[in-house]
Amino acid sequence: MKILIADDEPLARSRLRRIIEDMGHHDIVGEATNGKEVLVQSGELKPDLILLDIRMPQMDGLEAALHLSNLDNPPAIIFTTAFSEHALAAFGSHAVDYVLKPIRRERLEQAIQKARKVNRAQLVELGQNDETDHSRTHISAQISGNIRLVPIEDIFYFQAEQKYTTVRYTDGEVLIDESLKSLEEEFGDRFVRIHRNALVAKAYMDALEKLPSGQWVVKLRGLNGALEVSRRHMTGIRKLLKQLSS
Amino acid sequence: MNESNQSPLPDGDAAPDAADDFFLPDFCNVRMVFAVVVIAEMLAIVLTLAPLERAANRWEDLSIISLFIQWVALISSAVLCLARSWLRKLSDTAAATASYLLLLTTTSLISEATYWAAHWLFLGPNLPQGWHTDFLISNIGICAIVSAIVLRYFYIQHQYTRNLEAKSQARIQALQSRIRPHFLFNSLNTIASLTTTQPELAEEATIDLADLFRGTLANASYEVQLKQEWNLARRYLHIEKLRLGQRLQVEWAVDMVPMDALIPQLTIQPLVENAIYHGIEHIPEGGTITIAGTIENGAKKENRLITITITNPVPGYTPPKERASNKMAQENIRMRLAAYYGAKGKLLAKKVDAMYELTLQFPYITARK
Figure (tube, rainbow over the protein chains, first blue to last red):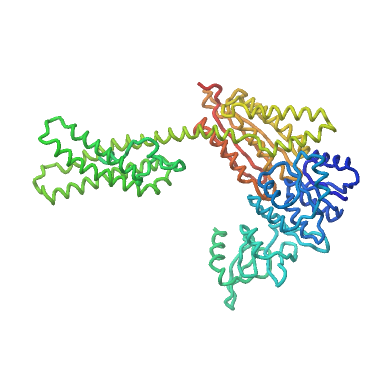
């Protein structure tokens, strides 16, 4: 089995490596030190299994797993963790496999034997069960088998089309298949609904303008053109802009 | 004579809920009102007994004085009850001054009303010359003195209970501030990894860990010498250095600080732990934690303040969780400093650019009586 090891601590990685090498018949294809590296390496190396530490800088293990689950053929995941009260309780109830550090050899062997793919629903629920605020730091889209990551702070707006949602950000556009409703729930502190089909980043909102037709629109900083505001959301947007400008 | 409404009742009634951190008790409380009535009556009796000349009819005097004092007492209670939500927004000094003025004003108004009622209703012009002014002045005088005493009483009572609470809180908080389980298990993992490859380092780490736990398990509610806190922090950083490798750099600049200064136990190490847990660990390339200390110049030792700053870089993005726990550790230490040093013990946090800076301040004390 091709295995990728992900942990930000060098000694933790080397111990895992030693244990797996002792087992034989497995191939360690790479080591990653944070969630972003995991995504890059799993795209290049196509591992069958990732041993994924939860607490890592820049992007943690839970979020990396969430992005991986968007792939058509995601690798199996075993979480490794030292201690996290909430996560531990959540793991048990969601049939996601995890091993506790310091890792016991037999326990890891057992976990690898029955390693399975984790599905998105399990991961989402895991995040929600985690009690702490766990919104993603990136949005991911699958582009020809690879993962394209978009940092949340680069996003201008989400716009719902018929089947997909367009994500417009500083470097272009990607399509994702998440609903505006779930995005709004997850990122409600950063984005605001201005229309049935649009969710806009508060940080980029610049001005509210009225077109000759009587239609109100919002202008975004760093972006040409404007987005329609529905009458239902007008009061809220006005209030928000006043708050932002004060 | 409204002073009677300030019931010097012990804490139970005066402080209906512990979270209510205001020195004036709640006068809307039924038990409080009852206390006000009882004490107003006691004051009425004192005033009835006080005159030197032999009174014609003490019972009649008592009933009139009681009637008046109860009016003043209950109306003043009502005023303070209504004004309480406004008063508590003010600083302690402003609130005390405002309630003092409220009490004086209420008393004057009621005295004035009483005089005119008496004048128009029954006595009319029979009232002796100058009685109006006398009546007003003596009421305000009594009110001014007794109100001042009673407000002062409330204030001291409040400080006292708050201090007691802080001390017992400090004890609990000290227990809670012990090392994170997260750290324990990660350290054990590090040691497990080192045992086969670098046994000497594994041995060192085990001993550091033992010292660290010994330090945190013993008498967690006392002050210790700063030297001990430094040692604890150094042992802690030594273990973290093994775990994080090049990502963790530490700079010490604490030569200026007297090592015999007393400091509540487990003050420095938890803050250093936070600097790693919320700072370094979230940055892929790591960074430097700076621990620096200075002491003020001054003639008298206790008047010199020791300042310790702990600085760490913070990640450019917001890590998704754990902010709450950071606040908790800081709050915990802030409370303990306040319990030991009052207003002289401080913990300030500020973020400048990509650096997080904690400043710890406390007086230089080497021995407790």
